[in-house]
Image (tube, rainbow, N blue to C red; front, side, top):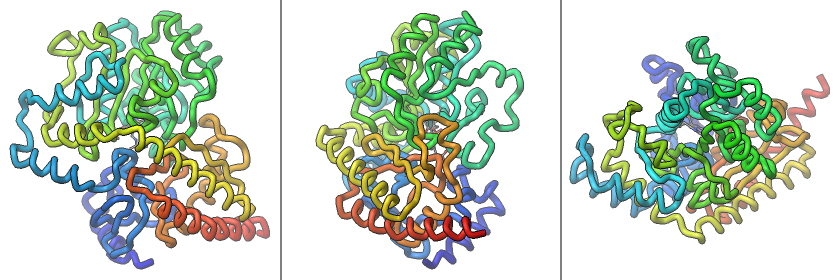
Length: 436
Ligand code: KE4
């Protein structure tokens, strides 16, 4: 596969952008090759600057549930842009989208738009601290809530991928207020609540973890978190930046029937443009400026073009869409598992609807420790072999593969066919490693 132009562009980019990219996981550091520079995307495929066309399972890390550049979306955002790209003033689009979000997720009695998932999560925690008058938060090892200081302790996603799950540059004082629990382990949460009685403001969780790779909640885990936090006067914050509108139109909170006090949203809510949001109980959100004293602001919050994209995306979240996504997600997961078994490669495929992660390990992956047992070299070999075969997966073992409405059975079958051959490469590599 010719990637000479990408290589040239990466060399040039590295002279002006730290690591040559605008977000670390894109640098392909964990998969031993240099990143592809993308020229265009349409439907389920992307084309790089060397003309290679690939079936895409990164899908911009989740926002593109309707696929790349759906014509209706392009038409809508073009028309919106012609009316002005930003006003820095209220427009009807914001409360229209806010009402759409509330109709899909009734727990968001009030919602504030921001421009990223990071802004959503950091703002939700600030409001929770103001509402409770407490300072500490609980997060889970391997979960990722964006790059605000409070969350960069044993964080997943790119932080784990690059081996910096606890980032330098976070002050000791901030780090001391972030307590770490184990995903799917209620006892670890109970223990923290008991030893820090009265000082924990919020527990923030990915209700379906996507940033250590996909790890669904164990039965009773989310309802258990709801009980424990209610008993201790701790606010329950669902970070649904990935699972929101992905697991179902109402997000994980609808699937599992657990109502959080606050929810963070991102990705799909912006239809591929920069939108994040946080919201929840009216009595809590009443603290957000200018209604209340908790300050949070943003130049491009509620941007009219981004709001238009979000409206377009949320209007098309039909039951049929989720049925198709779940069916194809299951088809892909089963195909990868079968291919691995036939190739004699240890693989655990965790899946939830249109989210999945193939973990190169023989033991089940139910939390961060078990995810870290995966063979990241094997994943890197698989990733490169799949790229050679026209499949663009996430360049990290600790990320989710995303399907979209544009992925057809044909795409999935072609992906499984490519995996059958790529997994033989992995088997041969591990075979040669065993002989050393
Ligand atoms: P952003 O600031 O990247 O919009 O959102 C942060 C965030 C918050 N919460 C969850 C559950 C998330 O998954 C994310 C961001 N996800 C990563 C991919 N796992 C974004 C990709 C990247 O960092 O380049």
